[in-house]
Image (cartoon, rainbow, N blue to C red; front, side, top):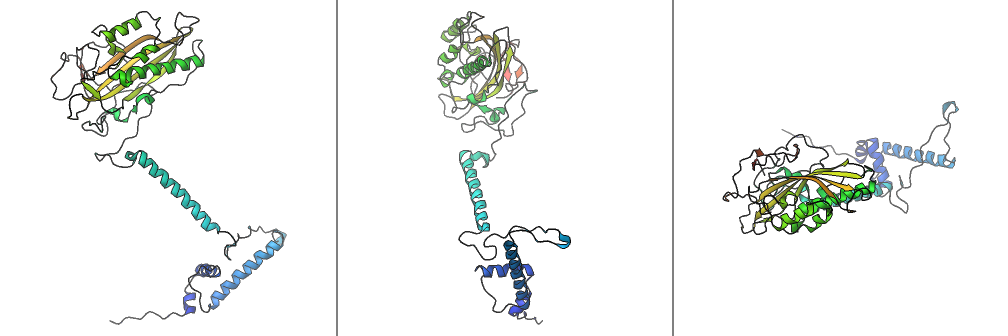
Length: 402
C-alpha cells in the first residue's frame, strides 16, 4: 500500500496554519528578542496582524497624549479606557524585570518556604506523616476533658503488646496528653468574697500538688514528697502528721498511696519519662472567704522489672479525686498561702492486693501471684464516667485492661 508523503509547507503556509493568537504571541516574542527564529518573509496575514498591533499601540499613545482622558463614544458618552500597558508589555523590559517573571519568582519563593516548613515539621515529628515502626501512624491527641465522660473510652485503633519504644500501645492513654501539661488550669474568677487573683493562686497551688504527688520523678521512685507536703496547711488538724506517719511506717491504716504515687525502685522502673494524664479541674464557691478547687485526674504509668531485661512493659493506672480549699486568713484560722484538703479518694489499677508497704506493685506476665487474691468486681481503670466518692467496695478486684 502506498503512502502519501507529507506536504512540503512553505513559510507562508506555516504562517497561515497559526491562529491569530499564536501569531500575535510569536510576533511579540520576536520583537522582544525571545523568539527562537524569525520568518524570512511574513505572510500577508502576518503583515495584517502586525499592522493591527501597531495601530493599537498608536491608539494607546494618543490616549496617553490626551492626558489619560477617555474619548467620547456615540451619543457623546465618555468611553472608559483601561490603564496604559506596563513597560515591556510588547517591547521588553526597560531597566527592570517583567512583572510575569517577578510574580513567578514570588510564587516560587512561597512554595519554597512552605516546603521548608513542611520538612521542618517532618524532622520534628516524623510520625505525623510517616508510618510508625509497626506500619501504623500516630493518632491525633484527644481534646482536653471539660466535663465528665458519658462512658468508658473505646478500644484504641492500634492494638498490640506494649514495648519500651511504644509503652502505651493498646491503651486508651496512647492519645492522652503527657505530664504536667495535661493538667490545665481553668480561667479564674472571683468567688465567695475571694478575688480573681486569690482564685488563680488556688488553682496554681492545686496543680503544684498534683504534679508533686504524682509526676515528680523522685516521688515516683519512693522519695519523700516534700514539695507536695509544702502546699498543705500545717494548721489543718491531723492531716500532715498522718501523712508523715504513712511515709515513715506505712501500713493498712496509714497508707501514703491515698495521696502519693510511689513505686519500689528495687522492683520496678518507669519506662522513659512520659506519664499519660487525663482529667479536669473545676471551681466551686464555699462559705464566705472559701474557694474550692475540685480535681479529678487519671495517671497511667508504664513500668518494667528493675532486674529483668525481657523488655516486658506493664502499666499501672491511678485515678485521684480531691477537693482543696483556699481560705481567707482574715476570716479563718489558716496559714496564708496554704491549702486545706477537704477530701481525697484514689483508685489503683494493676497493683497487688493486700500489700501495705507504701508502694504500688504492678503485675507482669509469668509472675507468681503477689498479695491477696482478687475477690472484688471487675473494673475498667480507664472509665472516668463514674464518680469516685469513697463509698466504693473496699474489696480488691481485677482490671479488665491496662
